[in-house]
Amino acid sequence: MMPKIIRITTVPLSLKLLLAGQMNFLREKGWDIIMVSSGGSEIKSIEKKENVRHEIIPFTRQITPWQDLKCVIKLYFLLKKEKPNIVHTHTPKAGLLGMIAANLAGVPIRIHTVAGILAMASNGRRKKFLEKAEKFTYSNATNIWPNSKGLYDFVLKQKLCPESKMRVIAKGSSNGVDLEKFNRKALKENHLVAATMRILPSEDEYLILAVGRLVKDKGVEELVEAFLGSKIVNQSKLILLGEFEQKLNPLNPTTIQTIQDHPRIVQIDWTDHVAHYMALADVLVHASHREGFPNVLLEAGAMQLPVICSDIIGNTDLISQQKTGLIFPVKNVEVLREALEFAFVKRDHMIALAENLYQEVKTNYNRKFLQESIFSAYQELLKAHQTNE
Image 1 (cartoon, one colour):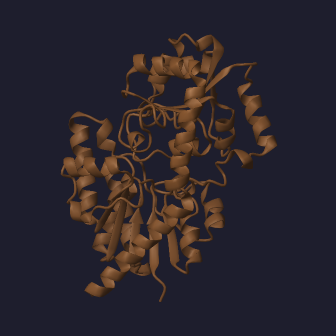
Image 2 (tube, one colour):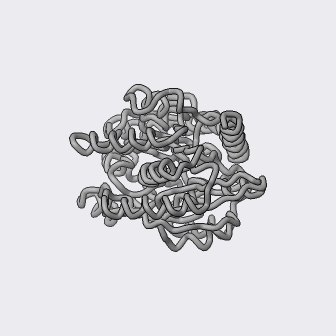
Image 3 (cartoon, helix red, strand yellow):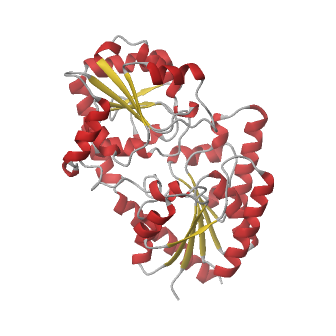
């Protein structure tokens, strides 16, 4: 009998972007796999790409007690019917409900990947509540895989989970980076033209790129303020690649207005051709307030694009100050502004840092290497379980 595994994320977009290729990789190894998430338009294309079936459990990303309880019950019956050897969850809500249901259903190996902790960017009662939820997720799991050394240390320091359950796979990251896709030699001329048409850069314009949802937690407000306050604003363009998300963690209305109205800021809703925008940019800024292990920095590294990022866990697991990029204190507009001006003036220096990052990414974060590492970890757990039976 081939091992059976169920992979669970809150929304299908996570299966598409965060775990791309992993399910197909396991299927090719002969494993039986089922993907689970809430419904969404992406499901058909994910099923086709991964060659794996998908089951819908109507998760929400907000706190919705009755809906959450319904999801746990539905998951429980699905797991009882399918009898997987392993349940592996990603994202906070899928982690909490998936680990509870898997524990109740008696699934022997219950893995949760930690790729960022919501409580980190919260305070007061909400912070306490989120920490309790995190602890409860970990207590229902048999294995906790933080996707960076920084997160591993944080979980230990906060006493959220015993060390015996924890492990960082390879050097970190949930899925590495696809070096065939994020590769300057693999770019398509028509997508480059389309990206150029959307940015409309004038001659010699310095292009600053940020990639991610346009929410407070991603540091968008600080970035916009630093950019507009910088000496280079009239020789540059700020390109924000991502959609406004006004339900969770919205930007303040003034920032939104500025983004929409300012002639030097270009906002582009999500695209699957991120690599082409990275190829056109001069620097990538990742000003996020909390991360697990940011894929966008791996992608910038693979594209040999210089990086400026905040000094948070996840970012600093990959970027070293003045070695592989520039780091500024999180939420500090003043230092971010200086970093933008420095990068503008010291372009050769920034390119040298980007080259160092490229070497690091190529060596340690190739997607194929990471998928093999995850597969080996699964096999070890199965072996240990069989031995203990």
